[in-house]
Image (cartoon, rainbow, N blue to C red; front, side):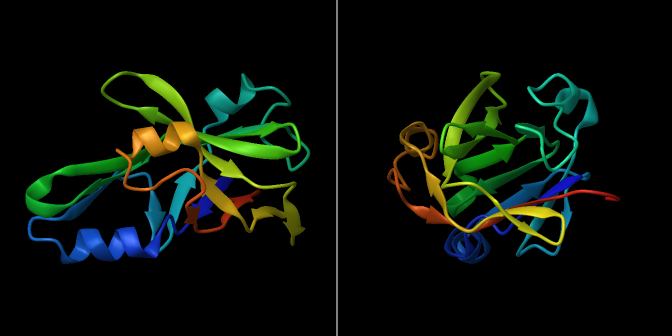
Length: 155
């Protein structure tokens, strides 16, 4: 199981073009730099409601992180150890704040996922109110981010 996410192209372009800007990608995170592949974390998934390892589960946990640094190495934000879980009619994705150890529901995955060839896919991903605070107000609540897919099987 893994999570595929392009995060936000404008954020990636900003980091790539800013003097001293860079990405810090954990070694376990795959992808091509435009889309990231966070590996499933079976240990954490097993403790989540629904088991987290099959498409009919209510929650999924992933490992790894991607941190964003802008002008002159200024920290912009991080997606660390994401967890995706059902929250009523929508789903949420939380991320771990490394410095504080606090998990924040930073993104809203709107509606129920579409099943695409055994993968769960959310076309509409938005920053939550808590995520807006986490990203320092750079992305107000409701700002659209790239779609997310949770794929099952190898990888």
